[in-house]
Length: 106
Image (tube, rainbow, N blue to C red):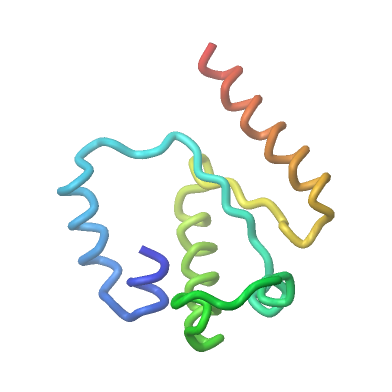
């Protein structure tokens, strides 16, 4: 949705319809979005860029904005975590979010 739709220009409504048809009622209960500004994320890369990473920064900004828009639409399912923080803090937050969600199921 984010890459092909928001980033690549395929109509998001079309992708949503296709997704609903293909997946029916199968959807994740929880999605964790590790959010970081595009330039900061690229600054962390320590390897050669793959095919997707070689796309223009404007593409990656649209993808990030798309993910954030999806998170605003579904705040109960998509939890945004600020990935600019230290890895240990991000890891702790992720563990806390997952454990809280699992406790609700018990």
